[in-house]
Image 1 (cartoon, rainbow over the protein chains, first blue to last red):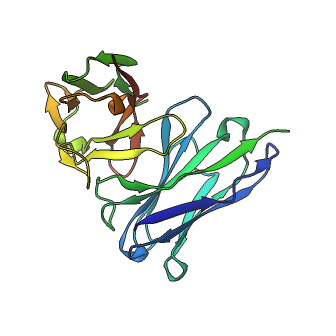
Image 2 (image 1 turned 90 degrees about the vertical axis):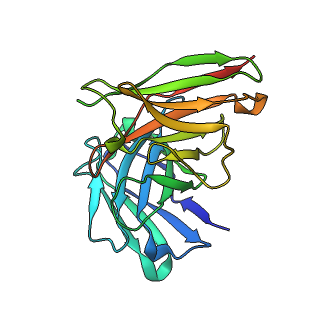
Length: 122
Length: 109
């Protein structure tokens, strides 16, 4: 069974940093691109980042570009999101998602984790 | 700024058919935008219904179908069931980035 488990969400002060993790199992992690998507409380979904199968290509939404960095460790079946210069508007439930393919090719998110909550507040 | 538009809400009778749309403020949605559709009930993670405009994800019943209708992408739900009452989000691929619509709250009554 394909499974994605996010972790690392906590309460952090504005301007702080945080690293989220997504542990993957049930599939060959290194064969697939991966996404991060977030959902602010009571709001809709917002795509924020994409990394291809080997980590050589990364893409970001304008709202996080320059502050967030996505990476992966295929040897550990893990996806990461380094979040710096956090703002109140980054408060959200963060989901990782498995793409249908390894390249960046417009297939989108096929399987989702359950999410981890990040709260940015003083 | 690219804005993906969806109806805020829609209702359908049990057994009925409903078509939700996904548009683009800057023009028409074509198959080249590789529209995806996601279903989310409150408190749950999203579930992928459709990708690449009209391909059903694994395990999704054929009551759900995706298409291009005029200048928008569309999700059609046939034979609506009570469990279909959810939020539905579309997402468009804009070349290495994705943009979600604001979502449609579907009520089955």
